[in-house]
Length: 304
Image (tube, rainbow, N blue to C red):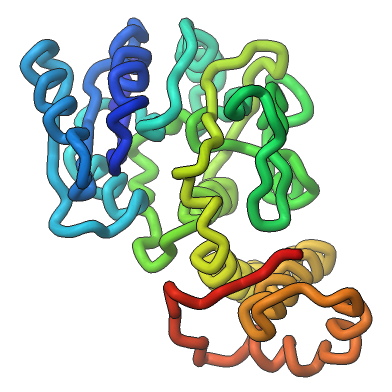
C-alpha cells in the first residue's frame, strides 16, 4: 500500500516540521505533496528544505491565496499513489497511521475509503470556542463503532469524521469545492459518503492529532458564518435531489437558519428561537433562492 499525503500550507511555520515528519515516518507513505498557498511567513522555505532532504517530498505553490480546498486540489492533480490521505499543516499523524487501513483494504476489496479516529488538542488543555461549537482537549472525532460501514445518515446523526483520519482510493477522483472558504472538508466527506463505500477503523486507536489554536480558520467568525450558511444551503438542495430522509433535510434547514440569522442580524438575541419560528417562511425563501448575500469580510458578528 502506497499513499499520497497532501498537506495544504499557509502560514504554518511553527507546526510544519512536526507535521511533515509525521507524514514521512509512515511506512506506507509514497509521497508527501506540500502546496503552499502563498504563505507570508517562512513556510515555503521549510517546505523546500524538506524537499531537499527526502525525495518523497514535492513542493508546489498555489497561484494566489485560494484557500485549503484549492491547495488540496493542486495536490490531487499531482498525486500518483493508489491511495490518498490529507493532513493539515498544523496537525500531525501518530505512529501506524495507515497500518489498519492496509489490512481493511485487503479484506474489503470493494471498499473505497476508511475513517480513522482523530483526537483534539487545545492550547494548555483549555476549552476553545468556535462558531456553535466547543472544542475540548483530548475529545475524539471518530465513528461510534469499529470496523463498521459508515453511511450518510450516520454522519448527519452526529458520527463525526475528520479529514485527517480519511484514507481513500485515488480512483474516486473527487475534488474540493473551491467556492467554500470554510467547511470544504465536510462538503468533501459528504460527497464521498454519498458516492462510495466507507468503513470505520478501530475507535480505540488514535491515528492523528487535530490542533485547535487562534490561527485556525474556525476562529474567523464572520467567514465561518457566511460559508457555513453557503454549505448548509448547498447540502439542503442535495438532500432534496438525493431524496434523503426528512430528518436530514430538517437538520440542514435548521443549520441554515442558524447561520442565516447570524449573518442577517449580526448577533444573537435572547429571543432568537422564537424569532426563527416566526420567520420560518422568510428562511425557507432564502434557502431555496438562487441569490445569496455578498460576502463582506469586515462584517461584525457577535455571538454573545
